[in-house]
Length: 88
Image (cartoon, rainbow, N blue to C red; front, side, top):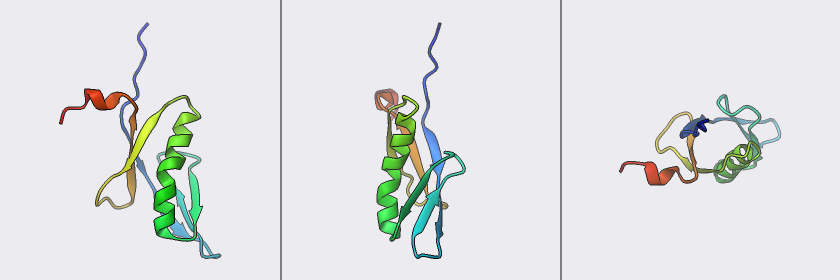
């Protein structure tokens, strides 16, 4: 039996400001993602950890990095160990 390997996934993030002044991040690609912070900068710092923890809860270890100049905000989740198979 072969084991299917996870490929890199794009996680689009939608940011909204709540009435209490907090910024909230959710994702149409990663159901259940919810991050809150009083600043956009703080929110952007917390999002990768939240994505990593959600994948880890499903026994998948990933490295997460922001996609540059993307709108809406997006991150890419790359399975750990997959970097060695990337062509640069």
